[in-house]
Length: 118
Image (cartoon, rainbow, N blue to C red):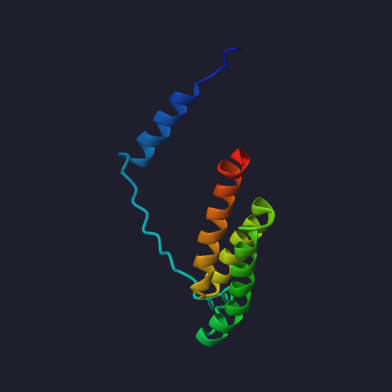
């Protein structure tokens, strides 16, 4: 770096502060405000109680039928389909979906661990 001829930057700062007086700590009073906006509508619309139980009932019976069928034919395939449909039915409010999940799980476990020995 080359030296700048004349007074340095620090000398200039000291001269300016000497003219301006003692350095005071500056306080800034800032005003902030929140904007008021209309809240966005929810992306997912909740179903009514009646609509959710009747919509899940048909799905739950289908899931239960697949889970029971999986006890006799293709346990892994039909059991997995029964479990997935059971979760969907339970989300819609049908308690039969829990039965489908349980029976499908038992069918898959029996199909994987017990049936190969027979």
